Length: 385
Ligand SMILES: Cc1ncc(COP(=O)(O)O)c(C=O)c1O
Image 1 (cartoon, rainbow, N blue to C red):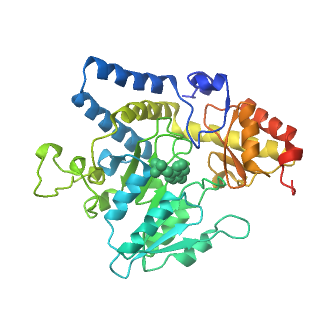
Image 2 (cartoon, rainbow, N blue to C red; image 1 turned 90 degrees about the vertical axis):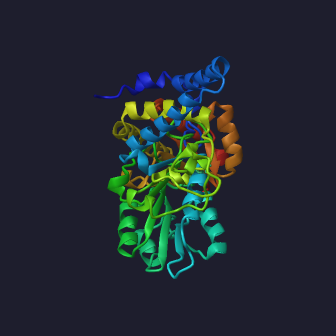
C-alpha cells in the first residue's frame, strides 16, 4: 500500500506554522504522541501508580524497536539515552588483554568517542579513523585502522556534521574478518532510513527516540546481537537488569538472560508512552517508503542548492547520505537566527547549516529554505560559492 504522506503531514500541527527542517535535532510533534503523553497524565490523576500498565508500555517500545530493526525483543535494551546504551555496553568489555583497541571515526557524535576514551582508564586504546582531503572517510582508512588487536569498531551511520553516510556493510566486512565487533550509532538515520540489523551485519546498535523516531527525549535503545547477549556481562547494572526484577536480592547480581541486562533502573514511563506512539507512526508509514521519500527530498534540496550556486557539503550519491543536507556558510550562527526569524527551523554545527528532512516535509519546504538562502546569499554564502 502506498503511504499517504500528505495525510500524515496534517498530523503534525507545527508544520502549519513553520518550515520545519529540524528532525535531526528534535522531531515535529505528532497528534498521537501528544495524546499519548496526555493519556499518561490522565492515568496519573485517575489511577496514581499504574505499574502494571506502565511495564507493558516499556515492553511495547522494546517490541516495536525490535520490529523496526528486524530482530527479536530479547536483543533490545530500552535505555535512558544512546549514551546510556553505549556506557552499559562498554562496561561489559574487557580491555586487559592485547585486543584492547577501539576504532572510532572522525565523524562520530561526541558521545560515541568520549565514552570509548573514558575506557582508557580500563586499558582501552582508542584510534581515530581520519577523513580524507575531500572531507569524507573512504573504506581504505578503516582498512588501515582495524587490525587483529581491535576489539570494537564504533561508528556512526550518518555524520551529524555533514550528513555523509558511512559504508557500514564494508566496515563490518573488514572488522569481522579481523575478529572485531561493530557498534553502529544510528541516531542520525533510524526512522528516516531503513535500518535492518541483520542485513547490515553489525553486532550492536544504539539510537534514540527524539529525532526521526518521532518520540521524545529521555529514551533510547541498545541492540545486542543474540550471540553476544549472554557472553557480555555489564558491570553497569541495576534491578531492572536482573533476570527476576521482583527478586529484590541484595546478595547477588543475576543479570537477565536477554539484552535487558544492559538496562538499569525504573523505566522512563512517560517517555515510553511518547516513544510507543512515535514508533507506531514510523512503522505504519513503512520505513522503506519513508526512506524513498526522504531520499527524494534531500536529492531535490541538493539540486536546488546547486541551481543557486550554493552547493552543500553532503554527498549527492543517494547511497552516501542520510536525511540531512549540510550547507556551508559564513557566520552560521547569524544565518541560523535569520532563518529562524523567517520561520524556517534548522540547526547548525561548525560552519554548516543543517536542513534535516522527514517524510512530513515537502518540496515546498525545500523551496522556502533555498529561496531564503538565495535572498541572504550576499551576507552568508561562503566566498567560494
Ligand atoms: C549521532 C548521534 N549519536 C548520539 C547522540 C546523543 O544521544 P543521547 O543524547 O541519547 O546520548 C546524538 C544526538 O544528537 C546523535 O546525533
